Image (cartoon, rainbow over all chains, first blue to last red; front, top):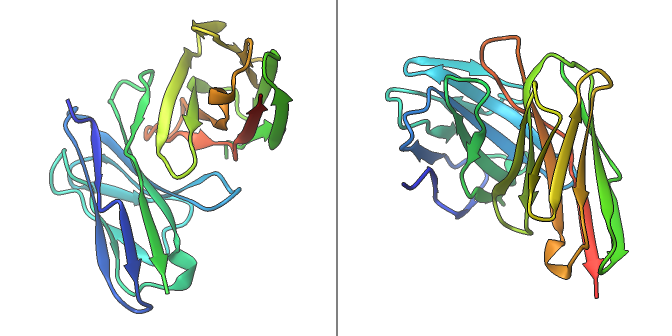
Length: 113
Length: 114
Protein backbone atom coordinates (compact mmCIF):
# COMPACT_ATOMS: atom_id res chain seq x y z
CA UNK A 1 0.00 0.00 0.00
CA UNK A 2 1.84 3.08 -1.28
CA UNK A 3 -0.27 5.75 0.46
CA UNK A 4 0.30 9.24 -0.99
CA UNK A 5 2.97 9.49 -3.67
CA UNK A 6 4.43 12.75 -4.93
CA UNK A 7 6.69 13.28 -7.91
CA UNK A 8 9.20 14.70 -8.50
CA UNK A 9 11.05 14.89 -5.18
CA UNK A 10 13.21 17.80 -6.30
CA UNK A 11 13.04 20.29 -9.13
CA UNK A 12 14.76 23.48 -10.18
CA UNK A 13 12.80 25.80 -12.45
CA UNK A 14 13.73 28.99 -14.20
CA UNK A 15 11.53 32.04 -13.77
CA UNK A 16 8.60 31.87 -16.16
CA UNK A 17 8.74 28.13 -16.72
CA UNK A 18 5.80 25.86 -16.04
CA UNK A 19 5.54 22.49 -14.36
CA UNK A 20 3.12 20.06 -12.80
CA UNK A 21 3.59 18.48 -9.42
CA UNK A 22 2.02 15.06 -9.38
CA UNK A 23 0.15 13.54 -6.46
CA UNK A 24 -1.60 10.20 -6.37
CA UNK A 25 -3.15 8.20 -3.55
CA UNK A 26 -4.28 4.60 -3.49
CA UNK A 27 -6.52 4.72 -0.41
CA UNK A 28 -9.69 5.79 -2.24
CA UNK A 29 -9.80 9.00 -0.22
CA UNK A 30 -12.28 11.66 -1.21
CA UNK A 31 -10.40 14.61 0.24
CA UNK A 32 -7.07 15.76 -1.11
CA UNK A 33 -5.03 18.85 -0.27
CA UNK A 34 -1.99 20.76 -1.46
CA UNK A 35 0.12 22.66 1.07
CA UNK A 36 3.30 24.64 0.78
CA UNK A 37 5.80 24.90 3.57
CA UNK A 38 8.17 27.80 3.91
CA UNK A 39 10.88 27.88 6.59
CA UNK A 40 9.42 28.69 10.00
CA UNK A 41 5.98 29.34 8.55
CA UNK A 42 4.16 26.06 8.97
CA UNK A 43 2.00 24.63 6.21
CA UNK A 44 -0.30 26.83 4.18
CA UNK A 45 -3.17 25.43 2.13
CA UNK A 46 -3.00 26.13 -1.60
CA UNK A 47 -5.96 24.16 -3.00
CA UNK A 48 -8.13 21.31 -1.91
CA UNK A 49 -10.64 18.87 -3.36
CA UNK A 50 -13.54 17.05 -1.74
CA UNK A 51 -14.00 14.63 -4.61
CA UNK A 52 -13.42 14.03 -8.30
CA UNK A 53 -14.42 17.07 -10.34
CA UNK A 54 -14.54 19.39 -7.32
CA UNK A 55 -11.74 21.77 -6.33
CA UNK A 56 -11.55 24.93 -4.28
CA UNK A 57 -9.03 27.56 -3.29
CA UNK A 58 -7.19 27.55 -0.03
CA UNK A 59 -5.27 30.29 1.71
CA UNK A 60 -2.58 30.93 -0.95
CA UNK A 61 -3.92 29.88 -4.41
CA UNK A 62 -2.41 32.63 -6.57
CA UNK A 63 -0.02 31.32 -9.21
CA UNK A 64 -1.32 27.76 -9.01
CA UNK A 65 -4.00 25.62 -10.61
CA UNK A 66 -5.35 22.17 -9.86
CA UNK A 67 -7.61 19.56 -11.38
CA UNK A 68 -9.23 16.43 -10.01
CA UNK A 69 -10.37 14.21 -12.86
CA UNK A 70 -10.06 11.01 -10.82
CA UNK A 71 -10.28 10.09 -7.15
CA UNK A 72 -6.63 9.01 -7.15
CA UNK A 73 -4.88 12.00 -8.75
CA UNK A 74 -4.62 15.64 -7.75
CA UNK A 75 -1.94 17.43 -9.79
CA UNK A 76 -0.78 20.96 -8.95
CA UNK A 77 0.20 23.20 -11.87
CA UNK A 78 2.52 26.19 -11.79
CA UNK A 79 2.07 28.20 -14.97
CA UNK A 80 4.66 30.98 -14.70
CA UNK A 81 7.13 30.11 -11.99
CA UNK A 82 8.29 32.94 -9.74
CA UNK A 83 11.01 32.99 -7.03
CA UNK A 84 8.24 33.40 -4.41
CA UNK A 85 7.11 29.88 -5.29
CA UNK A 86 10.35 28.40 -4.03
CA UNK A 87 9.09 26.12 -1.28
CA UNK A 88 8.43 22.56 -0.25
CA UNK A 89 5.09 21.27 -1.46
CA UNK A 90 3.11 18.60 0.31
CA UNK A 91 0.12 16.68 -0.93
CA UNK A 92 -2.24 15.06 1.58
CA UNK A 93 -5.38 12.98 1.51
CA UNK A 94 -8.13 12.09 3.94
CA UNK A 95 -11.12 9.82 4.14
CA UNK A 96 -14.71 11.06 3.89
CA UNK A 97 -14.97 10.14 7.55
CA UNK A 98 -13.56 13.27 9.11
CA UNK A 99 -12.47 11.58 12.30
CA UNK A 100 -9.76 9.66 10.48
CA UNK A 101 -6.23 10.89 10.07
CA UNK A 102 -4.70 12.78 7.21
CA UNK A 103 -1.93 11.12 5.20
CA UNK A 104 0.94 13.06 3.68
CA UNK A 105 3.30 12.54 0.78
CA UNK A 106 7.04 12.97 1.16
CA UNK A 107 7.08 16.40 -0.43
CA UNK A 108 8.48 18.10 -3.52
CA UNK A 109 11.28 20.59 -3.00
CA UNK A 110 10.99 23.28 -5.68
CA UNK A 111 13.51 26.01 -6.34
CA UNK A 112 12.78 28.81 -8.81
CA UNK A 113 15.84 30.71 -10.02
CA UNK B 1 -11.07 30.88 10.92
CA UNK B 2 -9.15 28.30 12.88
CA UNK B 3 -5.74 29.38 14.13
CA UNK B 4 -3.25 26.96 15.61
CA UNK B 5 -0.32 28.12 17.71
CA UNK B 6 2.60 26.08 18.94
CA UNK B 7 4.77 27.09 21.85
CA UNK B 8 7.71 27.09 22.16
CA UNK B 9 8.96 27.61 18.62
CA UNK B 10 12.25 25.96 19.52
CA UNK B 11 13.49 23.85 22.37
CA UNK B 12 16.91 22.45 23.26
CA UNK B 13 17.20 19.94 26.07
CA UNK B 14 19.73 17.44 27.37
CA UNK B 15 19.11 13.78 26.79
CA UNK B 16 16.88 12.09 29.33
CA UNK B 17 14.61 15.02 30.10
CA UNK B 18 10.85 14.74 30.03
CA UNK B 19 9.36 17.52 27.96
CA UNK B 20 6.05 19.02 26.93
CA UNK B 21 5.17 20.63 23.63
CA UNK B 22 2.10 22.83 23.49
CA UNK B 23 -0.51 23.33 20.79
CA UNK B 24 -3.44 25.71 21.12
CA UNK B 25 -6.35 26.26 18.75
CA UNK B 26 -8.97 28.99 18.60
CA UNK B 27 -12.01 27.01 17.42
CA UNK B 28 -12.89 24.11 19.70
CA UNK B 29 -15.28 22.57 17.13
CA UNK B 30 -12.79 20.02 15.89
CA UNK B 31 -13.08 16.40 14.82
CA UNK B 32 -9.58 15.50 15.84
CA UNK B 33 -6.10 16.76 16.48
CA UNK B 34 -3.08 15.11 14.95
CA UNK B 35 0.59 15.34 15.94
CA UNK B 36 3.29 14.93 13.31
CA UNK B 37 7.03 14.65 13.31
CA UNK B 38 9.12 16.15 10.52
CA UNK B 39 12.81 15.44 10.10
CA UNK B 40 14.93 17.98 8.20
CA UNK B 41 14.24 17.78 4.48
CA UNK B 42 11.64 15.06 4.94
CA UNK B 43 7.91 14.68 4.91
CA UNK B 44 5.43 14.46 7.78
CA UNK B 45 5.15 11.32 9.86
CA UNK B 46 1.97 10.93 11.86
CA UNK B 47 2.62 10.29 15.55
CA UNK B 48 -0.70 10.41 17.32
CA UNK B 49 -4.31 11.16 16.48
CA UNK B 50 -6.74 12.25 19.19
CA UNK B 51 -10.45 12.25 18.43
CA UNK B 52 -12.56 15.05 19.85
CA UNK B 53 -14.23 12.58 22.21
CA UNK B 54 -10.91 11.41 23.63
CA UNK B 55 -8.73 12.92 26.32
CA UNK B 56 -5.40 11.36 25.43
CA UNK B 57 -3.51 8.92 23.24
CA UNK B 58 -0.27 7.11 23.96
CA UNK B 59 2.37 5.53 21.78
CA UNK B 60 5.56 4.36 23.42
CA UNK B 61 7.25 7.34 25.08
CA UNK B 62 4.76 9.76 23.55
CA UNK B 63 1.54 10.88 25.17
CA UNK B 64 -0.80 13.44 23.66
CA UNK B 65 -3.65 15.04 25.54
CA UNK B 66 -6.58 17.09 24.35
CA UNK B 67 -8.67 19.65 26.23
CA UNK B 68 -11.22 21.03 23.81
CA UNK B 69 -12.79 23.39 26.30
CA UNK B 70 -9.54 25.28 26.70
CA UNK B 71 -8.45 24.77 23.10
CA UNK B 72 -5.22 23.02 24.01
CA UNK B 73 -3.29 19.89 23.26
CA UNK B 74 0.04 18.82 24.67
CA UNK B 75 2.57 16.30 23.46
CA UNK B 76 4.57 14.77 26.27
CA UNK B 77 7.85 13.06 25.41
CA UNK B 78 9.31 10.94 28.18
CA UNK B 79 13.02 10.30 28.61
CA UNK B 80 14.01 12.25 25.50
CA UNK B 81 16.72 10.88 23.20
CA UNK B 82 18.89 12.50 20.51
CA UNK B 83 16.83 10.60 17.95
CA UNK B 84 13.80 12.63 19.00
CA UNK B 85 15.38 15.73 17.47
CA UNK B 86 12.97 16.96 14.82
CA UNK B 87 10.19 19.47 14.26
CA UNK B 88 6.85 18.57 15.80
CA UNK B 89 3.68 19.88 14.20
CA UNK B 90 0.09 19.73 15.36
CA UNK B 91 -2.94 19.99 13.09
CA UNK B 92 -6.60 20.48 14.00
CA UNK B 93 -9.32 19.10 11.73
CA UNK B 94 -12.53 21.16 11.98
CA UNK B 95 -16.15 20.01 12.24
CA UNK B 96 -17.54 22.80 10.13
CA UNK B 97 -17.13 23.50 6.42
CA UNK B 98 -17.43 19.98 5.08
CA UNK B 99 -13.91 19.93 3.66
CA UNK B 100 -12.26 18.93 6.94
CA UNK B 101 -9.09 20.81 6.12
CA UNK B 102 -6.35 20.29 8.71
CA UNK B 103 -4.98 23.60 10.00
CA UNK B 104 -1.37 23.47 11.10
CA UNK B 105 0.70 25.23 13.69
CA UNK B 106 4.18 26.44 12.77
CA UNK B 107 5.81 23.66 14.71
CA UNK B 108 8.25 23.26 17.57
CA UNK B 109 11.84 22.56 16.59
CA UNK B 110 13.32 20.18 19.15
CA UNK B 111 16.98 19.43 19.68
CA UNK B 112 17.96 16.77 22.20
CA UNK B 113 21.67 16.85 22.83
CA UNK B 114 23.70 13.99 24.33
